[in-house]
Image (cartoon, rainbow, N blue to C red; front, side, top):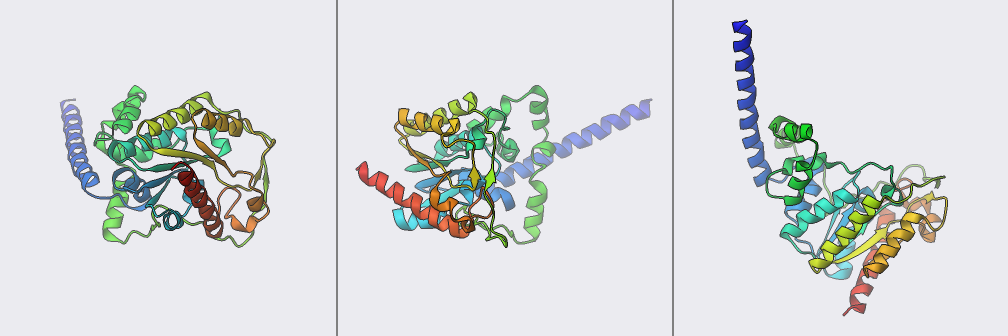
Length: 306
């Protein structure tokens, strides 16, 4: 019994010491290096970019707007901060991180009609775990408000960094093969032209998500940042032309005097499926056209407000 007890104590002590040492090493790495691979665009968005125009959203924004085209038209620096699989709560957290260190002139927030629904899950916050307790208030607040068992797990460095340490090791030995153009990842042109999808039902917009959208707008306006909301083109026929999520977001934008670009049902794109990678993502040719359209609108909006 004594041997078993000694073994347990020794094993626990070794694991605890290893966890602490591992945490110190990886935390210092995160603070002094840019994270590689799929973390790279997010890492640059949160900690480095000082672009005057920021494009925020999930993969439909990351694939839809080429910041180089916007830069050439606007004569303002631009970065695409689209992160796949995310939602308004994630966007709010990321925008909080950005505004903590940098005030851009413009933020374009791209949304999908479906992601505002009641039954659509929240964003994938696990990608923000490496930034926990290294100086980002909104990230700390999010994880500190989680359930007690999750907060306990976050005290372990092995748990907190389990999504990145292998990638850090891998990309220290091999070149990082993931490259983006200021965060933009142009969608491939598929071998087969995608077809229009039919959706019979879309959930009513979630009150929580709509309130989150209002907070994002207010935070930007408080900092003097011009914010624009857009729904990028898609190859989806929704059940009604006037979707509750679209009309509600439009109403919120009108109340807060925010420009709203509703392109989800854009006739030109609907009639040109060869501009899409799939039903919800533009390919690189479609992105070029949509980027010019967004740049032209932004330019016109700024000129009208001078």
